[in-house]
Length: 458
Image (cartoon, rainbow, N blue to C red; front, side, top):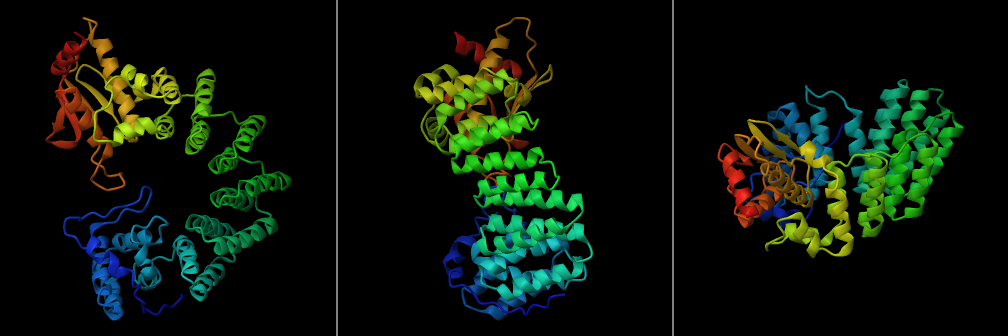
């Protein structure tokens, strides 16, 4: 086991963050989308560290680390460490404590050695210039796993993926060299497949899709058939860089290899076009999806509508917005209007989000970004109007719109979708209100909603 000395140089930037992090009005921290959310206990621990850092007292900080690990359950301690090791750590000014915290955790009686944690820690140490510590951890892993080839390749796979996410170029190059050597020297097909898979994905993450495509060719030479995973990564790697000709070439290559274009690949392509404001290219692709009977998904809506600046200005603004699909199309520019028309002509996403029976009509907006929730709401209202026009239509006892409470939002507990839906309800003078028993949804009696919608048709 690597023995670490729990000494800590306090970054001067900690004092800058003191007031923000210690405000009692923010019991839940702000987390980047996709980051590791913090428990309340870990948040209090970080707040304590920041307060001690304000008086430049490393001895107290080290004492708090020791106390935290000794008094915390395994899950709480590992949560704090995982948060610090995340590339989207919302406390980057605390990253200096990651190694002393790891060292103290590794001494706990409940700790089981985990090479994945080491793989996440090494690139952070390299970025901090702690090369001796990172090399010592690397050597420890190699020593423990040298006779376990599968476990060793998994470590290097985790390591290059972690280096790519942290954008540690030197760490990535070193890990890539070790992994490449291991793959080339191994006779195990499992080792080759896992190694090539991580090499391709990590090269794309590092902005090197051309090199990743070369690795795909090496796979073929080594008798390893590329999977849809590798081809998708290369396709998206080119797309994220704006190399659309290469991305479209990869689509043809996938088809030649027997992998038809599906919803996931299509969403990658749409996202790539949208990132470079290539809205006119998105329309033919949506039409191609329909022609090939490739179903739209919630992510399809998200990819397309997040790329529409006028729609995003509506849902993010404080003013009013169109409250019907036809009104929306009339105020959009030609490119955005065409995209909206292509989306609404396919009702598959609305059908999947909506449940309609005698007891309840429920619309579930989970997974939708604000632009998607907005358009789906407009489609849903039109669908209700269409059905309620028919006298034989059975009116559900209750109507519910589920939008969540913001657990997965960039600011935990603040749901942009809920805020949007509330604004829409107010502007349309809808009878639906927030459920007092579940603040993540809007409810109303079915007959009341029907009457409101019928009156709006008059």
